[in-house]
Length: 217
Image 1 (cartoon, rainbow, N blue to C red):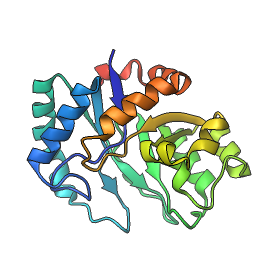
Image 2 (image 1 turned 180 degrees about the vertical axis):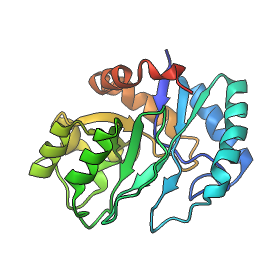
Image 3 (image 1 turned 90 degrees about the horizontal axis):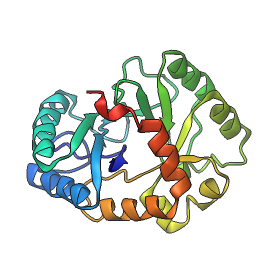
Image 4 (image 1 turned 45 degrees about the horizontal axis):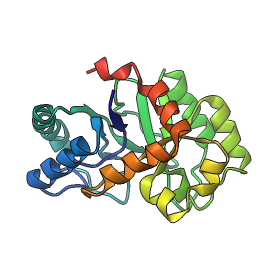
């Protein structure tokens, strides 16, 4: 089994990620070259700071999935769901059961614990994206322990690891997933592959979490 990327913005003409089909193909090729066999595309949903052309999502995914298959890559469709003071009613999970959620960088959302509980009760595995970016959040925050105990998985970004911003999260043992949050950079796949080799414990967590899901459409 190859490596998996679970956080990327690689659908052209959708959000603030890749801006052309050619760029999409180039980045997908870089993932294949770096040893990945599964990539999840996660366009932004409900993010007040990003314009997402939701009408293009499924059309672009169908095209990209067909092109990825020619390279030997399995592409999955998901989303990065923004949770603010109002909980979104509709989400687009990947592999049928994983909900990738993001929060405001500077302001703690109201009722965060409650919103995560709702998603978990619906049967989703909740993955909190790029935890190192939230200025109001830290591994020592009682809320971090609470939602971790609920069953929420914590993800950090490649750039967060490289800059050191994610170090306190990794050292705390709370990180379950490292991902690229790739918006069109062909260098990210190799960097992510290197980090997954550097942190075999996190890689093992990811293999355990996603091991059976490559069969899910």
